Image (cartoon, rainbow over all chains, first blue to last red; front, side, top):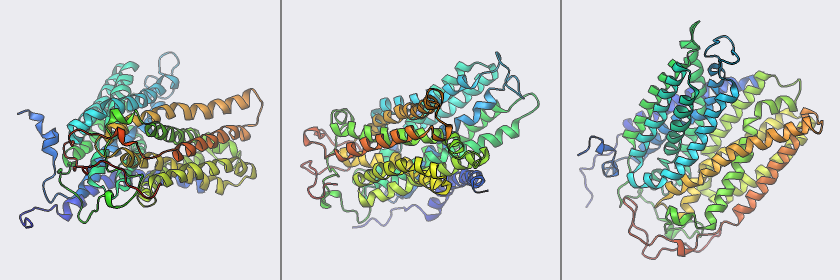
Length: 41
Length: 473
């Protein structure tokens, strides 16, 4: 029998967790991409 | 009960319903922080002007040859701590290891700040070098075996995501330090002290997010609809386990050590010299700013390659993936001197981007390769021991390229434009050796299999530990 009382992790919690790490990563990628653009100018 | 008991492995077992998709962000939080080590060089110049502020004061300020040792010590201690503390990590679980990693890594920043305040270089060696290096090593291997256990169906992708974070950490660390130093700089200070303290605090908060989020799966947990590899028939994926002490008695461990060492040596040698290399191979066409852009582009491909190639390895297999890294890498390296002679800048840049993506991929795919060979029981500890290859390559790669370049220019009178060709051909040769080593990797002999009790939180192995018959690669 499946336990119906299992509390599943909400999609919002997962999204927030990913945002916590994605935002700094995008910050780094943005600055690096800006620097990389100099190669094409 | 200890105040810190929440760090114990038993307290980190995921309750039913816990989503495994929370574990990669936890791992990324740690790797994004410790990856800052790659950008330590951003402090080199400011550290050499702590007294002079505007410029280096000979005899009083630290010169660049003094500060570069911080980086070297950190990477030596990364390898040592990963090798020494791997078994401890497997015993205490990822949360405690991540916590200790955060204390070491961020505490290292604080000790370095004190070193800047007192102007004592040994405190920087101790802080960012020794303690920071231990934090690096522990943090690097902490989430690996946990991720593999959460993602038995996609171990390459899971560990690739975490190790991509290490590459991302370098991209974050450099502009963050730069912006903070600009913010804190005054006519009497270059702002390094305050930057160390601020970064230590920011990184500690982010690493604590990882510490409190990470969970290990329950012993009987498996992903919904997952069929264990016992039914998939791949000889290169074992269903048994090998302990870390036993793994280092197998030829597979040393072959994979060599594969990682050679792949990293080739990549890091070029990455460390990328800026002067492109400027000297294309004199008058590539400015210093454009060369910095080239380095940035390589860092991006290094990052993307970690996720792309390790995810691909889940589909085509680890051995084939390394055949691509080493075979295609060798061919591309061999092509580089011709592209330089022909003045084909676009193809030159594209070639190096692919090479660096495979350099990153090599790091990211190795944990899954180890899991395929040695099982999940102590894969974190085995990975830690294998990382000594990284430390060795971090010394060998740049040394080969710079020594050969200098020798060709100073002793043989070769023009700077052509002075990298020999080093590049040697790198291609190293990749051939790596290719052969990878070809020689076969399933581990069953005499090495772990026959003791099942490790905590590790799903029970099949009764008869065996490798599957079928595909050989």
